Length: 399
Image 1: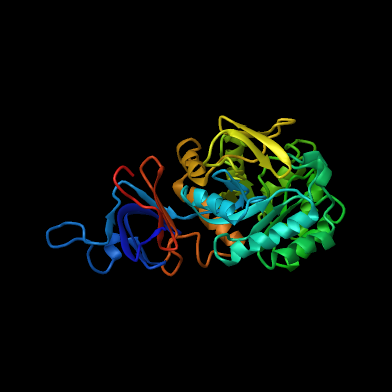
Image 2: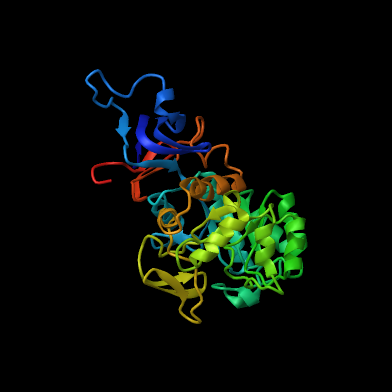
């Protein structure tokens, strides 16, 4: 069982707030809520006793960072467990694996399968959403293009018939958060409108759409680009395709998989430069092997081989999700891509929380919000994870 931080003060760290970085900051937690986040000088009372020693209940985090808990809106599993096929214990094992890497809010993503199976799976996962273990369900497939299927079984793909999209929404019992569609297919635009009517994110992905077709989908209400650059036509100077349309439109948030395999650093830089930090969401697109290791796995009905941390279909060699965890994405963004930490926090916490409609509770360090936070050391490695006031990873010697 996780230990609850009933009353804790995190002091001395660089704290990343919505307004910027506070040096020698202070975050106070009471039960499962943040009660204070700001400069130490603004705090009532002192964290030290008369002898100068740190007061009980205070963690001295000098040399560390405190950032909001990470929010992953596109994740298929981890820890050797699949969200697509595993039982409750398996799903919770995957959730726990990602929590240990800083993801305190997680949406479970499915992959293409038979419609009846996906409906049954949605009903099962909805129970875990209702329990608070998951933040929602994302349907990636089967309404995607066979031309850009990636690691999805082509024989199970289908056009996005609004009646079938509605079947999955109904099965999810209000817990569906996002559906990825190839909106150029028959029924695609009507399905976008259906999703918007039901308050579900319509995401453009695994698509062979033209620039003009993508603009039509955005005008119909699509708001997310599923793992931008991947599973879509490349940017062309005569046929710009979906990438240009998705990057240029202020209504679109672009998902990026920052694992060094899915994207060249120049592509990531282009996305940040054109879209801006407020329109980027870091995701993992993780599959079972995340936080677990190399080997042979199943992604839906397809076999996946993971070697040196890269997941590929055993037949055909297409990239099959990732083994990424969001702490690695954060560290890479800070140390290799050299992005400002405030921009990384927007992309990894604030922006996806806003998209999912949970930014009133998570995504930033503010009084009244859930005590979801991550402590990082000077090299941006995990030193502590707090979720709803309970330590998933408790800071200690050597962290």
